[in-house]
Amino acid sequence: MTISRADCVALDADDPLKHLRDEFVLPEGKIYLAGNSLGAMPKAAAAATARVVEEWSGQLVGGWNASGWYGLPLTTGDRLAPLIGAGPGQVAVGDSTSIAVVKAVSAALGLRPERRVIISDLANFPTDRYMVQGLAKALGGYEIRDIGTLDDALADDVACVLLSEVDYRTGDRYDTAEVTARVQAAGALMIWDLCHSAGALQVDVSQADFAVGCTYKYLNGGPGSPAFVYVNPRHLGQAEQLLTGWYSHAEPFAFEPDHRPAEGIRRFLVSTPHVLSYAPLNAALDIWERVDLAQVRAKSVALTSLFIEVAEELCAPYGLTLVSSRDPERRGSQVSFSHPDGYPVIRALADRGVHGDFRAPDILRFGFAPLYIRFADVHDAAVSLAEVLGEELWRDERYQRRLAVT
Ligand SMILES: Cc1ncc(COP(=O)(O)O)c(C=O)c1O
Ligand SMILES: Nc1c(O)cccc1C(=O)C[C@H](N)C(=O)O
Image 1 (tube, protein in one colour):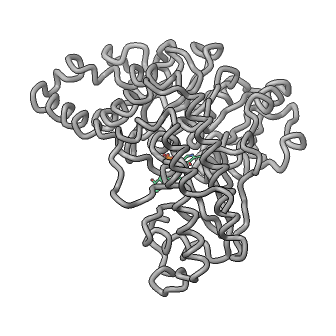
Image 2: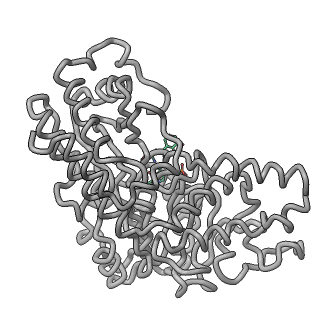
């Protein structure tokens, strides 16, 4: 083999991020390549969550003031902002990505009232599409244009464009600066879904109009951790989002009968924050505060390139086809292959301790979270994949049955 396991161990020894792995709880003897679905747990998350439970028991309702629960969506937003190239007062953390999509798209439509088309990529994660479909139906009079190429779709009737920087299936990445500039040159507003890029790339939202994303993948905020919405400062104070819950009111505790929108990013809140869910996320952000994103990206490129090289070399005879781009610039921190028996292959691989996942119809996905994945893991995962394919372990009948969550 061109690259040996010993070479990979040497790469690990030189890795400037190697000390971070110890900050996470990782299952013994397993290789976790599903951090693009749910990130690993920071060791500090348990104590951070226990602290909030203590605050609750000790302070009861006083916790809203004394422990800063009321301010969590914005204090956490300010901590997350540097990870996506945003500044203070531009990011609100709360709700889910699906809800954040409604906030961002509704705000964009309000800023372009004369335009009646929303562009949504067919490659968008389904919930983004479903939320836009629901919103368009509720508002009435909107057309959703599914893009083949952006050039064909951009016209003077387009209000906004919603795309994912990194495609959840293929792992391919848009050139966000170039696309944003084209969309804005056509007079439309650009909304990026950053679920598969935040914590994996050097995201730069500074030119985008809006962005949304989750915190439970590469950011390691925990299952169901709150999402984020970014609003470019040029729209703050002007853009109005549809979900006008009381946290978006100028004075929630004035209890006025009619909605009066808050100034600034607070307008993009909806209602009571899920206080317990912010605890593990903030524990993860404590780690992120000490991380250089340029090093994260460099390691991500190296890990994904290594996996492609070793997996292709070992699995060449077994019908595996690379789906992700070969150009690391055009790739997120994920490598996808297709195989006609992708589902049982992923199940058999998990039984051998290597956790990737499967996306219909035939995609094997492997996510490489640079904070805790080692080069030796990449090597070992490719060897296991070759064994599963070469020895046809996936043919075992118990791997054919579909689980509820794939
Ligand atoms: C690109 C993308 N958008 C949205 C979501 C999900 O949104 P939600 O957190 O609302 O379930 C996911 C993953 O589940 C995703 O990959
Ligand atoms: N959000 C998820 C969930 O609620 C259950 C299972 C998986 C997920 C995921 O995040 C999947 C992920 N967005 C994907 O890219 O497929």
